Length: 299
Image 1 (cartoon, rainbow, N blue to C red):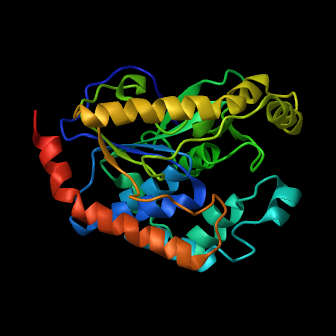
Image 2 (cartoon, rainbow, N blue to C red):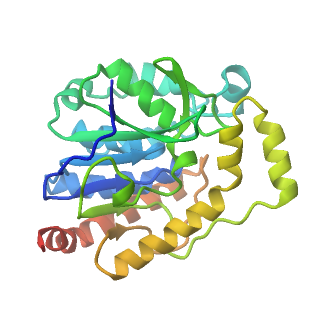
């Protein structure tokens, strides 16, 4: 498994950066399906949390798989639920998602993914240091990389930490809310394309002192760095939103996001809401595709 640390010069055709958002990731699935309609694949994809699950099917060239998975299994007890959280420590049942579902019920094309020329980087947060690590799909096995993706999706309180090597990691969004800026990446890119899962006016509510104390109590004292980071996610998220908005205005970032307020929760089971968000993503991905290509091609 390759941990990417050094700065590298990226190909000139841009870097795709995917926000998480759990079930809101179905918006990203729609956008990526629109890209696949055009046969367009970014040479490098950076993904956080649920964004990794969307990136997997993008690079395995399985158009509409994420749509089918979410619409068919959102209400399946094997897919997610409080029962899994109580019994196994994970609200989302990764054993089912990467096991029976990916192997038999709706096969994931791991061979195409593992031989794809594109590089994917999954963000995870170290339980010990609270720092972000970027894990590449190159130089590892499928079993190793799916563990990295599971770690990237492991939201504290919803999931237990995942062991990679001899260390424990949780959701990349803990150490890096929203998405990384170009200067926060382990390589050089001047053309970042972001797919976000909230509209441009969304801001997270601040966590009050009492709420922070309750959060710390629920998380326990095993990982103090994670406790600290969880308490400051809203402030760091909102700061990143403002920075990306400014860069978008200046033409230094291209952002695809929902046009209106998103009323889909992390654990959404309403199929109508999920389908509508997917269709919005596909429509926006198609309508902005040519604009995106022009932006990528401009020096």
